[in-house]
Length: 143
Image (cartoon, rainbow, N blue to C red; front, side):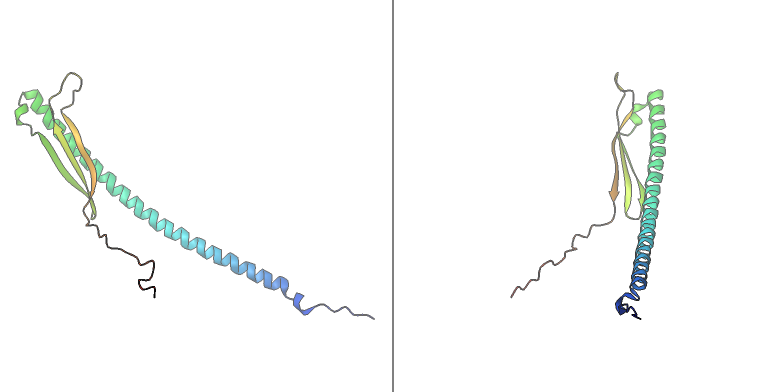
């Protein structure tokens, strides 16, 4: 009888391939998990920053509403001279920025019935910028 001999190399090829595929899948799953957790942390930071900004904006609008009521009273009482020509205030957003608001008062005219104009409504950074973050791309001595 003639016995067939199988090559030794083919004995575990499918097993090795299966182990390799499983290792690749575990690696990709771990990388996906790390990326997802990093994105979740980043999204939480963005959400906190956005909430802080809109909380400051709401405070600014409440302050503007109070100034508007004061200006309406001055206009109704005929005491417009008591109104300041400009109102300015700053509302902190977080430890690195604040909201700066400036209103310029004016008497209403025929086209515009408002008593003020918002001349500034801007987010200002309170953190000093450190511009010295250089990176050496090429070696200095090319000798």
